[in-house]
Length: 337
Image (cartoon, rainbow, N blue to C red):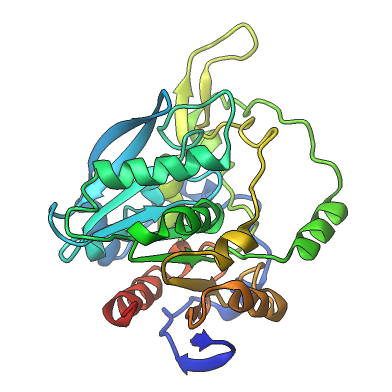
């Protein structure tokens, strides 16, 4: 459904789930172990989307290479997808093709994630710069102002970008990226306690053992294991032996990237956005509460739509990919005006 200041406007369709009870249960110890390294069977729509492979390139931002994937023709309206924490650009490779006929589409991997370079230090300013640099390099501004879409953590640099560069953007859409009040953020941090000292990513002796360790964070059930398998394959890299570690396979993301990182003030960025903003949430997301939704609508620009995807947890594009595509198509068809 879509809400404007708490009022229901439109119900969004959901895909059928195999078992509603299973969706409520905890995630299994291993999502992919039962397949022994073989890809799970996938529906035709997914195989067709993956066959629509992107062009792959890199752009440089402050001395680091940023991975960039593109679909569609230059000269069409621009659409940029931004992934969440620990993820990579290919989280959008089964979503982006649905928009490639009408848009020049791009997805990027933040530095410290995917195939992008790691940095000695990360900050919000550099992530905002990565957004704008990739969008320009991909040709997303060729037809005018583009639309940016950010999932989870990706919505935080996106709202900062909307505050700083919103005059250049047609719209910003956050996907299960909650904007919390300062009080709620402080409460979460106090309940969480001090952060553990980051450690290097574990190196697994075999590719299959690493695949068997793939999990979603936050933990959630997953009916569409063919998507989990596709994402997991793009999350691993092979490493040579070092003095401190044997050869094997490990995760691509930088485990040290959040040390000393400050995420700014998302509630201020949202309230000072210089472009239209929309929010999409999973109806079963761990982040979805009435207080969070009400606060987000309170600080967002007036009239910002809030879309709920039924039967979706935090990773909406994994849980309900076709419903997500439909909801996003609906937004882009009639909003913003």
